[in-house]
Length: 93
Image (cartoon, rainbow, N blue to C red; front, top):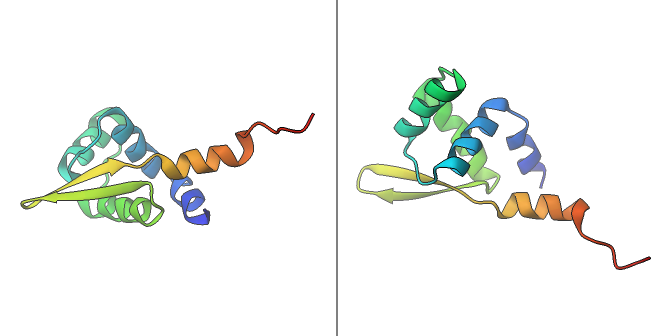
């Protein structure tokens, strides 16, 4: 779970997750364009790719290859486990 916290600590990675939450299955090129236009983040493709690697290592992003394109998908399960850690209703009075 520590990798999830590390991944969420960076504002650029949070912006990437926001973009994938809004429109899933994006390529690196699409993500870079949306980060520039919507968040005014002019990171290089290499920098965004490194951020995506951190998100993938944390289990927050999965990828699918189709030809020469790599599509990125937001996996919400680690976030649900994280939220559930503190938000589960207690059965005790």
